[in-house]
Image 1 (cartoon, rainbow, N blue to C red):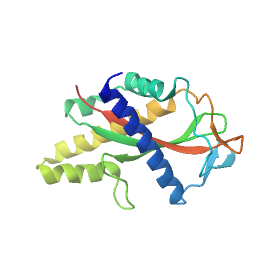
Image 2 (cartoon, rainbow, N blue to C red):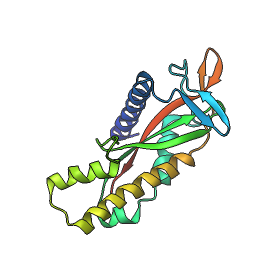
Image 3 (cartoon, rainbow, N blue to C red):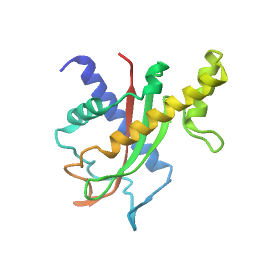
Image 4 (cartoon, one colour):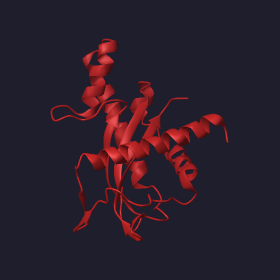
Length: 179
């Protein structure tokens, strides 16, 4: 393995841990509805979910499954979409939602694409048609991120607390880079 690859795995694990701790400490969404059942999200599992092949296999899945959205490619839009999801007691991925694009987080009055557009426009002037295309590119990247996470393989082992499987909130960054 290359040094860059190991650094990416390390950064991914740190990011997931930090985001998981942040989601837990805010006290938001401590329950999740799966089907018709309301489930409690464990704030401090003893063990996090484990995927077959570990973090390297998960990163490989993300890399190989990514389909760069056409609008984003045409506009050369790159960035990182942060996606939150819940791994249920059976290891299935549910309640998937994008929570950010690069350093933009949704607020009460502005969406993630709007905030990203404002930051980009502060750097250079964009015409209205280009602004809409840029926002559409970010929306497509968010949709693609949701697709990848929704098709992610089931966790081999769910999160555990006191020897019992529990629901756990997770987050991953999905990187969009034109090579």
